[in-house]
Length: 288
Image 1: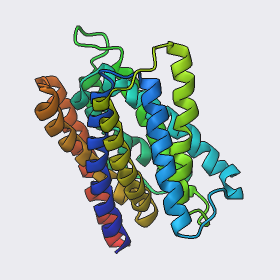
Image 2: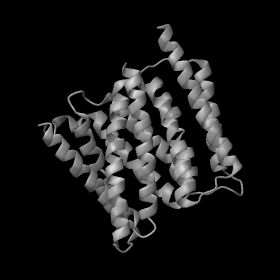
Image 3: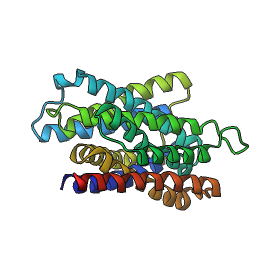
């Protein structure tokens, strides 16, 4: 039951994340990314504070200074910042395709951190998945876009966040984790804004796009936290691949993107390798 619940919430999270990415990419046409992160973090934090109070929980828990929470905060900063840069500097479809390597990184982390057994076939699937990522970014070839490396780095950040969420103290609720996760984006955006020195510009269209990103970001964040705390990491995580499907649809419809054949093949290889790890994980769980 836990794996089924976790898988459903993971798909919901990926759909909401794709819509959030769409709004952030659209708002970046008229707003600096540092300001976007500050407003996005502030809005999400306030919503989760309200939800925390509704549950009569403390916003500040001593456990926020625990090692898993500090690692989670740092990973959140890396993942969110780098992926925000990736989707504003590169097509949404290609950045999302690279992000599909996150479950493979999580799988590696689950073996190292939680001692989950990973057999040879799944290790091979991980290597094939990374080969798919290389097909998308194409280092050393004419189609290589250096900005795509931001998407690669973001996979490490998001994988660290997911693993740290799994190790977070049980005393912390999903709402409290949401408060802390969005809070770290405020100073991150502020530092980025100081570094770039871009003028602070907010217009009506960008304003409602940020509001949309906040709403779907909160839905995505809460659903992801539930998913990572419900089932086995190796079973639930591969459902992250559904994000690529949602991103491709939004990229084509909203931004008129046309992913080339190499990107589509690379994305398919990554997804298939992750799907294989899912099937293997389920087989192992059923045998146990």
